[in-house]
Image (cartoon, rainbow, N blue to C red; front, side):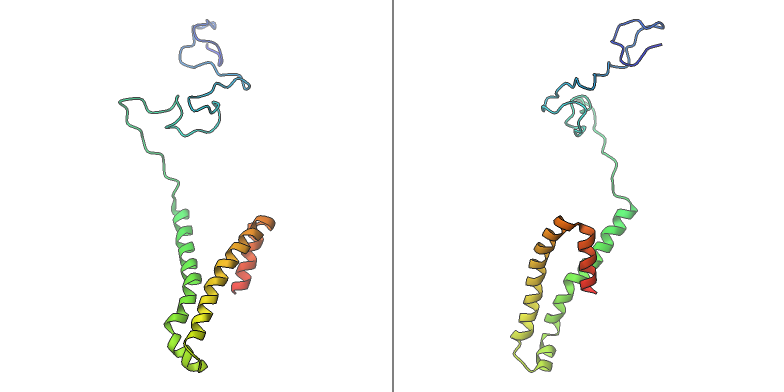
Length: 147
């Protein structure tokens, strides 16, 4: 019977171990051609031991996209369509808003421009806040403020 880690060609009672390579000690890592130590994460197509050989066909990796990820993407698209599409309603009803306020058309247009500027500046500020206090608290605050 062959033991794991036995050098090739060394008899271990039942014969020699030719099918399993000797495992390196944890502190002995040999560098690969890119200089990354073996044992660290490296894509299969870059790893010299797992790269496709000449004349072989590389198989495609399994997709990480499942039903849950598509539902999440659809929900995100719907939320962003509503939240970023809402300021455009001002443009559609600009004439009626201007008539009801009895002002120039530039006043409701200025309100729409300020909404977009506030969205941009607020996004940058909330990004810094999220880095400091966490994404969950920041997202909950934003949801409460939009409600």
